[in-house]
Length: 383
Image (cartoon, rainbow, N blue to C red):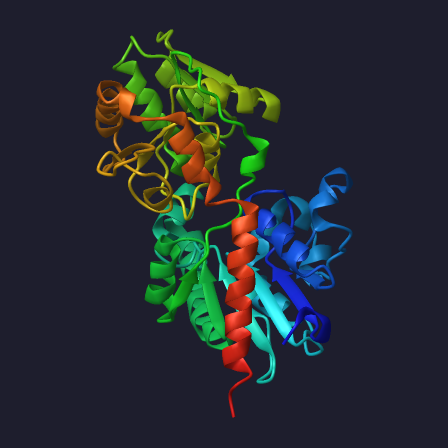
């Protein structure tokens, strides 16, 4: 089954920003340039559509619902039926890139469906309680309705896993979540990171850096709290979001903590290159930014859960690229920073850079193409 003799459909959840899931779509379209693209909705601005390489996705009725451009997530209960309305019957190979509903597309017995899963639906499975708390829907009639909708979503999500012929996961952490939710095996293929956009810097300044959208689950508050106890160490925070007022309150009176807000990419890259270490306290499915930091030759101090436990080599390895801490707390972050200080001579910029290169786009393309070819070979050998 070769590129020249089969038709390909690429399906994603929604297109609104160029972030981690969209980088996967970008690479899939590089691998399969003749593929047709499908999405629940598409609100990518004209000036940011380059990664789609001229593809204009076919969308669902969600695209035209009132306020969908800004509140598309509020239509999540309608997305299962929306994704099922996409007619993919004319394609030999269907590739879904899914963190919500894309894997639920309908395919027939002679169509190969491979699904690259960023996560089983986060809101519906083990992160349900966190999602309800953060969205203010953890009590009352609204909370009861939300819980019922998520219950229905879990049933649909489990059922539609049966329509996937081969699963790939973006980390071993997600591979385990797929096994828990769907009782299916998955192949770990790490997502593409644009390591070529970052260059190694050997000259480090005397500060630590963290950057992300300032959302509650990123736990930037714990990092700031840790540095309020270390006035001799400087922390720079790049990013903006709903947590900014809280962070300003925590950092008030501490001149060693600099809240820089949103910064353009060039400033972020330069600041990351010169940092002594990058600090990451979130539990992420994969975590692109810690890999980008290592591509700069910058070691990482990170929470030892989720994807970062796989992308950072801790002090228990021969060539460490960072320090891993086991509890999301200010005290543990403080201890990890102090441990980094005491063992700083062990971290080499070239080792960090070398570690990051295994997550490049080229590696992703090679591994994903092999995954699809092997799935096709098995699928078309069936009686």
